[in-house]
Image (cartoon, rainbow over all chains, first blue to last red):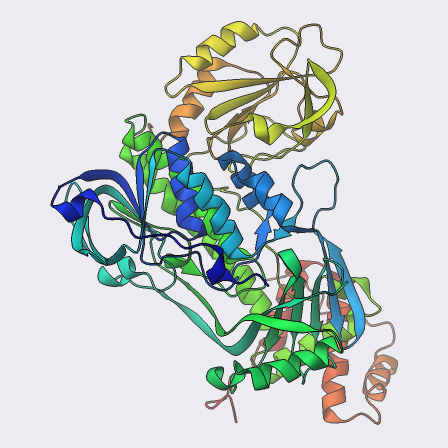
Length: 551
Length: 73
C-alpha cells in the first residue's frame, strides 16, 4: 500500500553558513512543496541560482492536493516533468453530479479534441513533489536543504536575512530575494506580522484517502444528499495506484478529533462502498476558508501559493493557483536578477496574481455557498435547483459542486498591448497560449505540440504570408534584449517550410485566428503580450518593452 | 428612471393567473410551498434571461422591505 512517509526521506546536510561562512544567495525559497519546487525549477531553467530550505525531511504526508489542471500540466511540460506526471496520474475529463441516487448532471471539461493535455489528472501531492524534487536535484543551479527550518526573517534595504534552525544549529541565510512558499501557516508571513484576512465557512469536511481495488470509472462523482450518508454531500475521486479520495460533509457541529477515529470513519465508508475491501491511507478534517494577503509582494519578499492565499477545495484552485503564481513570478525575477528588466517588472506579480486570486476566491465562495447553504432560503433555492436539474437543462448549469480551475487571463495587466485590429478567435492579450498539433517539415505526419515549441523565452508566433522576409525578422528578433524566438507557422502547401512548423491539421490557424501575416508575441510564461495582423518590428519591440515594464 | 423591467400590465388574463398561482400551492405544506415558489422563480428567471431585467426585478421586489432588527427572529 502506498504510504507517503515510505516514499522518500531526505537527509540533513550541513551548509557553509553553519561553518561560519557568509554567503549571499540570489534567490532563497522557503518551502519545498509543489509551489516552491515549481518556482525553483523555473528559476533554475532561467539560469538563476536558488537555494530551497524546508524543515521537513520528506515529501508531504497525506495526498492533500490531487487534481492538476491542464494549465498546470503545461507549466510542468515547460519545466520537464509534465509527461511523468501524466504517465503516473489518472487522466480524467468528466464529472457526474448526483442528487440522492439519481444522476442529474454530467460534464466534460475538455470539450474539444486535439489538445496535448487533458483537462485534469489526479495524482497524489507527494508524487507530484517527488517528480519535481528529482527534476530540481538534477539541476546544478538548485541547492536543496532539508531539515532547515526558517524561524524568523529580517528585512534590509539590499537583502533579506532568514534565521534557519537545523539539527546542527542555527545560522543566518542571506539572499537578495526571498520566495515564501511555506504554506497556509507561513512562518515568513507571521514573523513579518502581515495580514491574512478572509472568510471562514461554518462547515467541516472529512477527507479520506483509501486504498481499494474497485472498478469505478475515473470520473469525478459528487453527491448532494446521498442516501448512504446522512443528509449532506460527498465526493469520490480516483487517484494513482488504487487510492481514492473521498470527501464527506460533516456539518459545523462535528467534532474534528472524534470524526477522524477509525471507529467513526470505517462504518461511514462501509455504507458508501458496500462489500468492497478497503484500507484507510490518510484522513483529515478541515474547515472551508477563503483568505488572502492584501499584497503578495513586499519589497524583496514574495508570497506564493497557500502562504499568500487559501481557497476552499472542490475547485482544485489551491494547488493549481499556486503553480500559476510560480509560473508568473519566475521569469520576471530571473530577468530582473540578470539586469534584463527593471525592478518595476516585479510589481506586475501583484497586479496579475491578485485579480487571478480573487477570481479563484469568488468561484470557491460560490461553490461553498451552494454546497453549504448558510440560510433557510439559500437551502430552499439549492434544493429547487437540484430538483429542476433532473428534467430541465438550464438548471444543471446552476448546480455548483465546484467550478474547476481554469487558467487566469491577465486581462487588465499593464504588461499587455491591446488589440488594434479585430480578432474573431484566439487567446487575447493576457491569456495563456492555446495548444495545437503541428508538424515539422521533416516529419509532416507526426504530431508535435505547439506549446512544446515555445520554451521559456519570449516567442513570436507568426503565420506565414509567403511574402515576409523571415530570415531578416528572425535576426532582428534574436537581437532584441532579451532575445525573441521566432516560430513561423506555414500551411502544408507553403513553398518555403525550412525551419517552420507546419499547420498540418489546420488547427493552429483556427485557434489563433491566424490569417496570413498574423503574429502573437508570447512571454516566457506563455501568456500573450499582444497580437497583430502584420509582423512589424517596431510594434513588436514596443510591446516587448511594455511587457518588461520599461515604459 | 424608466428601466427595462415591464411593470405596466403584461398578464393576458390577470385574475385567471392569480387563481392558478394560489391554486398551485393547494394541499402543500409551508416547506413544499417554499420549494414550489423557488422553482417557479428559477424557471421564470431562466425564461427571461436578460440580466438587466432580472436585476431590476430583484430591486423592485426588495423595495420597501427592511431587514428586521434581529434577522434570525
